[in-house]
Image 1: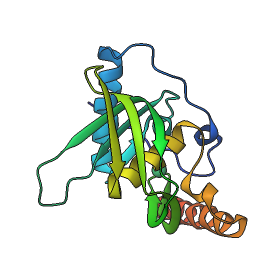
Image 2: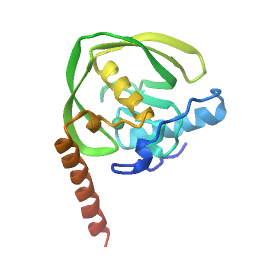
Image 3: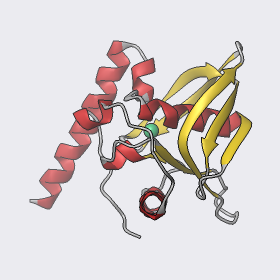
Image 4: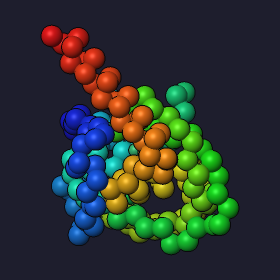
Length: 174
Ligand code: NI
């Protein structure tokens, strides 16, 4: 396993639409292992493959609390089969938009279908933090970031904040 670099806004790779995985084989499992390690190192609770520059429809997630055992979850080719009309606001963040948090409204519950780590099909409803996180990560597969759900002004402010932090980091290195 290896920790990979996480791409941040406004990297154009993040706007790419990811391609479906043909088969969940050892190369895909190796990708998921790297993604999980990268996510834990960040640290974060969800990561889409495109965030490490791999345009495949793969997501990893772990929603366990700090004092709980790790609960890694893997999603290949996830789809939303059904959602509810009721929207729910939730404060979101993203490893590709570091240190920026803003409320986004999404359906309160979604029914999803995906393949797990072993390529087995799973169909289930997701709600609460799980529901928010899977919708956020699935957006990444379509080149959509949570800041794309915000006003243009807020989106530009978020990108400027990330760029400023990066510049400051570069200066520190010198
Ligand atoms: Ni994200």
